[in-house]
Every structure is written in C-alpha cells, then in structure tokens.
Amino acid sequence: MENKGTKTIETDRLILRRFRMEDAGQMYENWASDPEVTKFLTWPTHSDVNVTKSLLEGWIAGYEDTSTYNWVMELKDTHEVIGNISVVRLREDIAAADMGYCMGKAWWGKGLMPEALHAVIAFLFEEVGLNRIAACHDVNNPKSGRVMEKAGMKLEGIWRAAGKNNVGICDEVWHSILREEF
Image 1 (cartoon, rainbow, N blue to C red):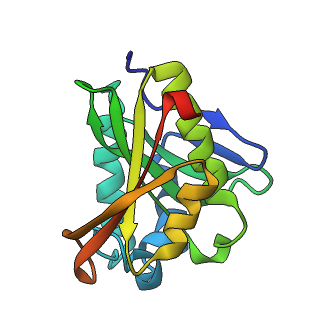
Image 2: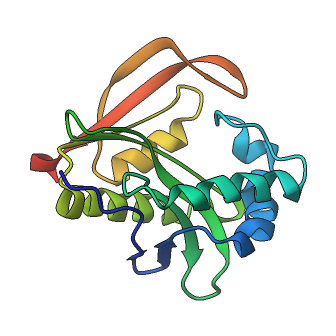
C-alpha cells in the first residue's frame, strides 16, 4: 500500500474533498448540531459552531499526514456540504481500514452515502492499495448497515457489547469488503 492522503473524488452527485474552515457553518447546521444525526456516533453533538471550528482546525492540520483520509461531502449542484466520510482506523501492517460516516438527515434515503462510500472504497483499493475495508454500526441503526451493503460490503457478524456511542455501550454489526471482491 502507498498512502496518498485525502484527494478529491467526484461521483455523479458529489465532490468528496478536504475540509476547509469555511465549511464550519454548514457542518454545524447540517449535521454536527443535530442529536438525531449524532445519536449513534462516538462524538458528542456540537453545542455551538465554535466546537465545529475547533474540530476542523485539527482535521485540516491533519491533512499534512498522507495517512489521513477525511472527506467532506459536497453536493455538486449546490456546493452545500452535507456530511463526512473518513478512515477512522488505518492498519498499514495488514493494508486495512475501518470507515466512519455521517450525513445530515435532510439527505438521508437518497442514496448519497452509498455513492460516497463506494467511491472511497474504489479509491482506497485502486490508488492506495488496501486489501480490506470494514465498517460497523450500532445494531439499533440498521440503515447504516444498508449503506454498507449497497456499497458492496458483506455482513461479517455482531460483536456483542463491543462499542460505545452516544446511546451507551452497544452491539456492533460489522461489514467488510476485500479488494478481490470489489
């Protein structure tokens, strides 16, 4: 594998790109401040836009590291930022990554997250050279699992009481895809 960093990826409807400080307002308004969006996430709902700005400062600085993969999802037609998709754990020793993602609820159910996840999977397999990509979701959030399935990932199983999110300790449902399956 060869780390390439967060490069811009385009899909039919999305531009996946690096975050910029000017994204803070829309990130806060569109998803980071919404307790329904953050319910099953591992980070707390942002109390104000300054929390979002502080987070983005760290994320943007992180782009100097080519092993950082963290995209904002921007709609091509309106240039509104609607969500985030990233590698939350990179295992270079086995060429594997665990993914995380979230998106504002106004865009749920439109096929945008599977579109983004599929594009990121393609980039990570074809350009970075990963062999395995995985993701998990709270057992009580099956719609996240549907995103994984639509992107070509296969169900692996449930890790009982293996995770913690804003709801508390939870069972994690794991999905994965191998490069040979893509």
